[in-house]
Image 1: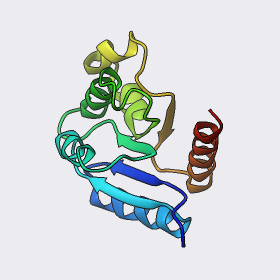
Image 2: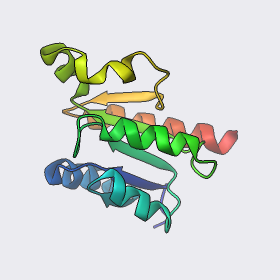
Image 3: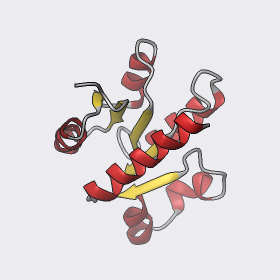
Length: 137
């Protein structure tokens, strides 16, 4: 069976990674994973994903955003679609915006944000729409 596309999932929660991998592979996607931004950067030297699914809070509360900003500055990855998967908004609501102020006041380096727990149907629909848009562009 041909893959619908290659997706890189970057998240430090092994349960989220396993669940996301099952959902994506069951729906025809090739999946690679990395547990941190640093590991993702190493992997990106060897693979070219069609989409990056990226957690915000890993080693630090803003590691995902830090990686996304870095990728958008790199000409190789400037056009890589990034979908953030996060409990970030809940954390901002409960703990305040303090640690995230530099992010909240800037242009975000991602266009789509999905809150955890994930709605698999909505995520799959968004991935399909993004890939379709990239093919027609």
